Structures are given as structure tokens and as C-alpha cells.
Image (tube, rainbow, N blue to C red; front, side):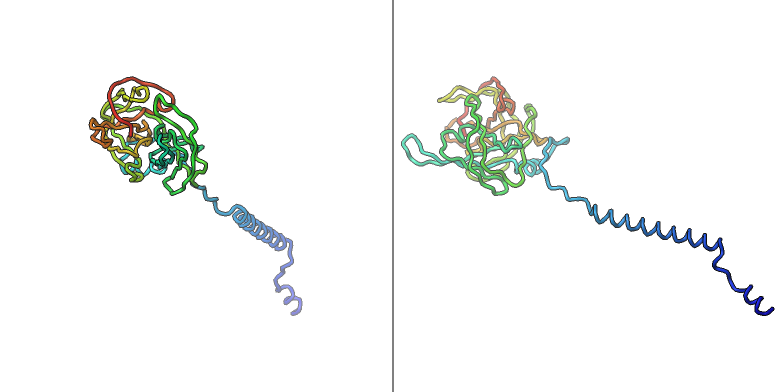
Length: 272
């Protein structure tokens, strides 16, 4: 009797209810383990998001920019142009000017007189990259040319071309006056529809007159509005003495004309 009572008092683990609960628990543990494995595997296979390489995607600003902000935004789009050749007496001569990257393929827009007649053309980008270049197109009527560099910088930053100019608008000129590379000056649009009288070529009409300081070496550079848009290409300054130095009047071909438009006006100025 005593033995029978002891056997009846022992816990019974192998009952149907206990087996069912054990099976459910095992299935639950298995599911948790599989879920954890899947999460870890997906994280390992996917990893952190790939870093996006910097890409130039310039656009006009929605709000007015300061001169400092225009300088910072547009300087990577401005290039120094150096030329070498020989004059009419077969003497070696060299020159310099400015250009602006006008297209995602690296095309540089500049003044024709900066590169016209040059035997060699060298472009220097803001990051220091240098490249030889050739003239791709000429527009003598507007004193505008495009050049094609043979090498591009690691990060190419085309400028935003467009926007109109009105008298009184704030403008910035970036260029390489007198060899002082990537210099920035500011002023306002002083007049519109001016005409540039040229002794050896037809007059250029429809020019923008501005008072941001420019000097020899600025020619071919951009005239920029306060939205970061290139509204003109600098081609000349006015100086009645013929000294070729700035006295407060510069001229730029409107960007529309530089890209194939036209205009009228009056005025007089020697080329930079």
C-alpha cells in the first residue's frame, strides 16, 4: 500500500497536456530563433546604405544670395584661361582671361577675343586641374566663343545660365583681373541696351552696363545675379583715356545673346 501511494504521488511529466505544451513551446522558440536569424541575415546582406557620391546639381536660388554666397557657389564654375601665340611681327605673346563652365560636358563659354588667334589655350579649374583646350565655336558678332577642354576636373560644376537683368539689380563679377585669380567684385546693373563701338569689327549692341569692378583678365567671365544665375559674359570696360583700366563702367553680353540672341543700344568701350 505504501508503495502504491508513493508511485501515485510522483509527478507525471509524460501526460498528453504536458506534451502538447512542450511542443508549442518548442515551436515558439524555433520561430523566434528563425526570425532572429532572418533579421541578422538581412542586415548583413543589405548593410548600411551606400554613400552617395557628390554630384553637381546646380540650380538658381529661391532667395537672394549675399556676395559671399555667390562667390562660394559660382567659383567652382569659373576657369582661368591662359593663351600663347605670336603677334603680327612673329613675336611671342601671351594672354589671360576668364571663362565659365556652361555645360555638363565641360564646354566653357568665354569672350572670343580672349582666345582668338591663340596657338595654345590652357584652362585651369578652381581645384587646380589644368587642361589644354580648343575653340569649339565662334560668334564674332557678339565677341563670344566656346572652348572644349581635353580634360575635366574630378567634380565638374556647370554654372546656371539664365535670368534677365534690370537696372538696379545687384550683380557679381568673378574673374582673373591682372592675374589675380578668382577675384570677386560686386555692384549693380547701371544700364541696358548699350552699344560697344569696335574699330576692327562691327559694333556689339544690347549690352548690359554694370559697375562691379573689372579689369584686363576679367574678360570672358560671368556676370551673376543675386540668385546665382549667369546673366551675362563680361567683354569690355569703358575708359576714355584708353588706359584699359576700370573707371566704373563695364559691359557684358546678355546670356541670351551669348547663346544666340541679339540686341540694340549705344555706348563706347575698349575690349578688356
